[in-house]
Length: 375
Image 1 (cartoon, rainbow, N blue to C red):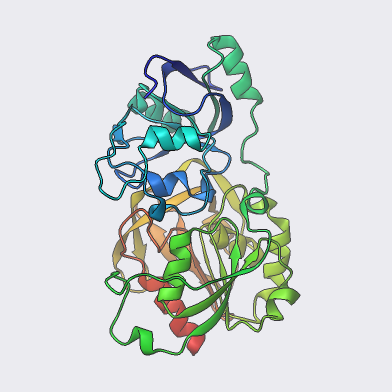
Image 2 (image 1 turned 90 degrees about the horizontal axis):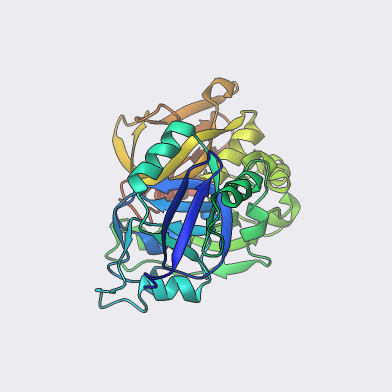
């Protein structure tokens, strides 16, 4: 850990903090968000949904079990920068392929520790969504604040097209049978042909789909509906992803042509795109939901599930049109967490049922969709 090299974090509000550089040298800007998960930093660092964002970890010690390539959710790091209170340079897990600081440097991720992350998190909660800069090269406070104020935010940006695959591919890797999503007899069910839109899809989502009984073909964001229907799918899945859902116009157009023709299930960004297609509106949240401990009530079963979430935009409940009913609600702030169309076979949730990282309370939603498609 390069504890002798300083680094700085500046926020557009004027707050400037100095810490230590513990990753690659350089300077990065983006929306500042905090994640409350106590573990799972390898999955967070490789989640494409963090494109355009600087991630602050609220748990004080990060990195103690190192980095394992098998835990990666994609083939690269996506956050613009990574912020911690204290980073461990010791990889204690026998599974680790590298320590966190070595991994960050090799992936070109600008990172800083020695920051009062409690102060920074409270600042985000009080001021709302903020742009920031993290730098190892510029220590001038006025210059840094100016750079933060000039930085691009995620508002109005179609980042899904940036992170998506460029060509279709087949995914067939599932989980081991000990995974909690398994149910007796599941592997004897007829497998279902599924087309999954990659808006920033995570590998554990794909594993969950395979595990639930789908044969998965992944297609790029913006793939026209005619191309998808030409693959003769029995269902369509819309993945998670970064950026402003209202800006993902190619996918909004494609999904508009798919609704009513094939069963559709969406999560996270896919949920938001479906809401727009069905007639609702989305808005940017003050500081979003980023963590592995968000309580959500299923309005059908009345059960409360602890969920993994990562989103900065949400659906405005006042704009839900006739024919669309609310199915899940967040118990912390009352935001929309799920909905379905009463006639078309369309449903979606705002959170991550694959829960990587997080609890597996909601993994049954993949099986529920497979049962719906099988009819």
